[in-house]
Image (tube, rainbow, N blue to C red; front, side):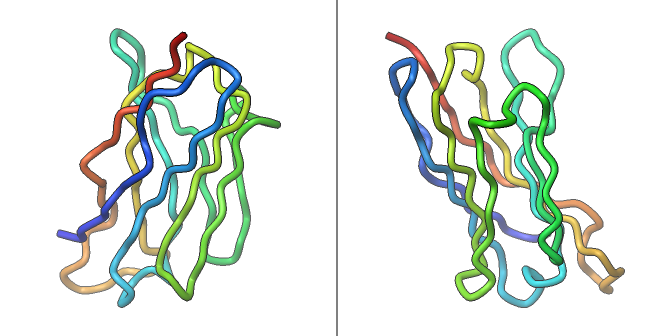
Length: 121
């Protein structure tokens, strides 16, 4: 199991900003596609953003122009900068890591424990 440690969630007013961080083991970070997935109560899980080890980025349509994913390979950390937050962004956000090559003993997909983001006035 690959341990992913998330931080940065919390309560913010509509229009506000938060930055989520996810630290991954240095032994695999550089070869992983990293992403953020969110799950709101009663809704389907949604892939919010992903960034490959080569820097290719994809966003869900619902967050384009508001959220920015980035990675710092020196710190083995992926970030999700969330601006102009809306109540509908309220969810538990999960970090996930997927190695781009098969590594013995390393799962094809690993998840963080999840972190709550609440957007409310």
